[in-house]
Length: 187
Image (cartoon, rainbow, N blue to C red; front, top):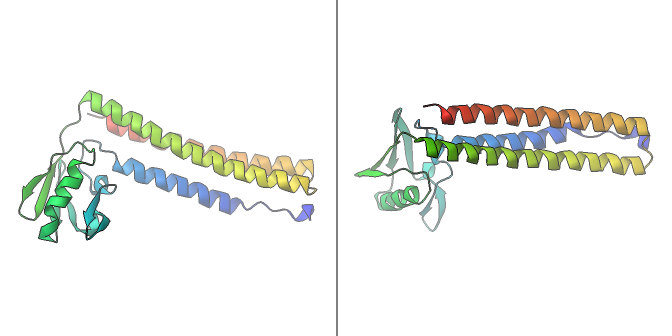
């Protein structure tokens, strides 16, 4: 049985890709001083008795580099959308114009840039922890196979493979973090 041991590296990479995808989503929600529709993705509105993403209650547009508009489809939800944005912690003050909510994106000051940079670092660390947990799962599978008779050479080979995949993904996270922090700190 031990000779037939095959670690599912595709599964490990798929799970690590999921962690990277989650990191990209979190990074997209960070405000960098430029308007982006994705910055509203984490904002949920109490609509129709449940928490609903903003893009499901209206059309989100970016007509200018420092302006996001939301054309709310249901006039009764305009106040709830405005409240959700105010309470989201994005630091944006919505302006109402009928069913259209305008979100002027203010310049980020140095202090806010540093805070956002730290938040980006926290997001990256969460992703690194996820990657390490996936690595640990792979290593546990190898140890279990070793207990079932996997040779020590094969064990080292598989452990090296898992470590190489892990290192590649951690480097990817570090590169993305550096890019995001540079984007945040750019004036």
